[in-house]
Image (cartoon, rainbow over all chains, first blue to last red; front, side, top):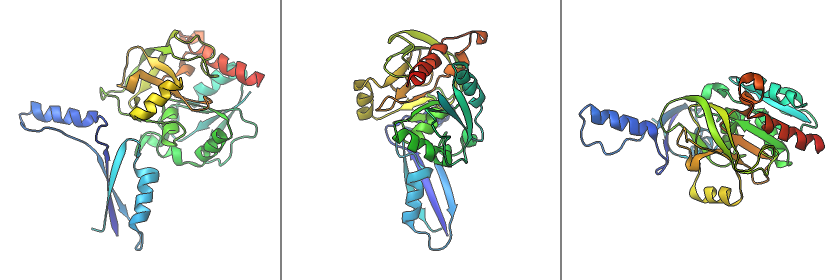
Length: 77
Length: 222
């Protein structure tokens, strides 16, 4: 079983990498990019029976820093 | 004064920290991250700079979960003193010993230079060697030093005089130019600049010497 965790900086926390990517896209001629946010994806291969609650606990304790980051868990796939 | 310097895989300022502490008379023990306990009778625990666990996941995140950090949390809860410099500051925030977080520098670049600072308070063992308001120059060397904290916590930090140091020329985008913060009981300090790199005249800058002298005066007397 697989879980996919997506970690993003919270809205309102400045994302300098996203800003740099946005600026690069603009200078390459891609118009209309109003915003870029860069995050990370963590794929977990899990023993059968691992619950979403357990993955959420992993996020709270390690995978995300909830002071600055939000996370989303997708189970399965 | 008994001090412990924690060593994680990837720590690289641990020996500099030990040298600076020994120079003011501390009995220093190096403590490996797998040790579940700190040496008995330790007054001050220093978490040094470096790249603990390769900065994987987030700077300080994996170190914050190590066995020795759990012992550090117990030490702090008992009212023990602790100092985190650079990566050590990142570890202290990840372990939620200090509020806020250190994000990537706003300019996206690793910054390595001597940075002018203002000492904002002399009310701590770490800053009592300076007059509040005095200006000193201390080296910085980091890529993730952009101190970020929510508005409520920031006003609490300011109201309680817990900002220890501010940058005079903000090098990294840190909120309110903050370079170092104290815990609520003022016994834990986290800071991005490296006082241990400026603690001896032979290094060409001894502005950090008063930092370590202040610690020694407080803890030898204690």
